Amino acid sequence: MIDIPFEFFNNVSNQSPLPSGGAGGWAAILANGEQPTHAVPVGLLKDASYVVCCDGAISHYDKADAVVGDGDSIPSWAKKKYECIFRQVDEQDDNDLTKATRFCLEKGYKRIVYLGATGLREDHTLGNISLIMRYVRDFDVEPMMVTNYGWFVPARGTTQFDSFPGQQVSIFNFGCRELKTEGLVYDGYPFSEWWQGTLNEASDHHFTIQADGPYLVYRTFSTDGKN
Image (cartoon, rainbow, N blue to C red; front, side):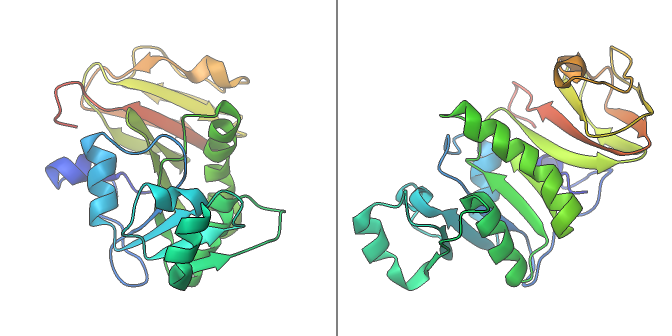
């Protein structure tokens, strides 16, 4: 599991080191949702070793290494301008985020940071967040989705997470029959509904989740600009 935001600011983490890919570093996939403005996602996009834009996202970022999608949302002027890096994938079984993920895997990147994948449309937001777990399960990707407010990371089994007192934490259960927590204000349990694991809070500089299966964790950035 990767946990970049703390490492991005502090260069120290209880999690695994900064991600590496086929050519070193991590790949970033920029979707066409709410674009990065917070220092963390902006910095992750800037420091990525390889950047793939999903179709129309190239309108927001002109330094991409590739543009991947079915071409339905990329403006005609951009399609012509970026023709040399545009890879059109017409099949409709997967969305552009998944097509871009497959493309990154072809380039040798398994550690992928997803940006611009939430906001603007709630249906796209829910779909994209849920895809994180599919990428872990089916593609063996190490993904992280970063927004302007916080970040999602998938985990399995017993994991300790960096945090700060007062950090808002949400846990989404994806099949755990056993789940408990230490270091959060409210005790975790094997949530049967997504809302049940939301709006928790860290009480210290780390917390631990013990579970017998996969789950998704969301943490907010601090308001003082340090994380």
